[in-house]
Amino acid sequence: MISTQDWADTQRLWDYHQMGHTTRPCSVAIGLGSHDLGVADAAVDLYKRGMAPLLVFTGATSPTTRERMPRGEAVHYQERAIELGVPASAVLVEPQARNTGENIRFSRDLLNEAGIAVSSVLLISKPYEERRSYATARKLWPGVEIVSASSPMTLREYVDSIGDARLVIDMLVGALQRLLVYPQQGFMISQRVPADVIDAYERLCRGGFTSRLLRDEEGHVRSQTRR
Image (cartoon, rainbow, N blue to C red; front, side, top):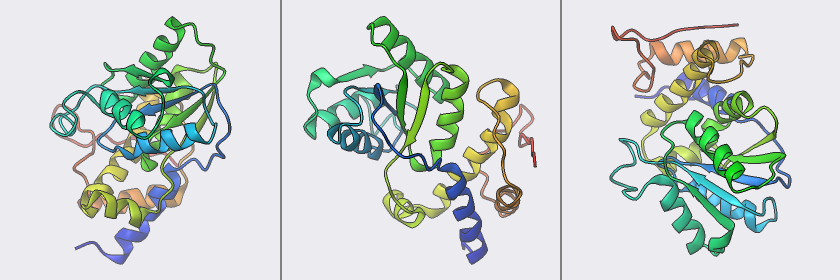
C-alpha cells in the first residue's frame, strides 16, 4: 500500500530530478537509451520544432530492455524516429553504451569522429533522470552547454505510462541515491540536495522502496547523505 506520505515524498523527488531548463536550439540532441520509447518521441518532437539539426541515440541493451529491444536501445529509438518522420540522414546511432557515463562519452566520441562541431547539447532522458544525466554530462563533457529535456508529463502520468507505481518510486529513490554517491566516485558533478528532498528520500528508503539502490559487496546499501 502506497500512502499519502509516500506520494508526497515521491513528488519531492520527482520535482528535484527535473532540471526545469527551457529548451532552445542546440548543436545536437542526444537521446539516452532506456526501456522508455518516450525518450525517442521527445527527441522527435524537439527535432521537428527546430531545436536540433541532428539526433544521436545511444544505448546497447540491459537486463530490463533485452527482450523488449533485442536490436539495442539506440537502434529501436532510431527506428521509432524514422517511423515518425525524421529522415535517416538526421540520425546517428551509438549502440555500445551500457550506462549513463558511456552514453555521454561514446556519443561525444562519435560526434568528434564525424567532425561535427558541438557547442551545446540537448540532452534527452526519462523525466526522473534529467538531473543525473545533466550531472554526468557536466563531468564528462565540460566544454559544452547542457540543456536537459524529457517528455513533459506529471508524476501520475508517468506512473500510468509505466503501470507499476512501486517500481517508479523505487527508480526515483535509486536515482537520488546515485546523485549522492556518484560524485565521490568521479562519475558526475556534485549538486546540492535540499534537506526536504533528503528527508523524503530517507522516509521512502525506510518504507521499503529500495529495489534500485546500489549495494556494496556485502549487500549493504551505499549511503552518502549530504545536507
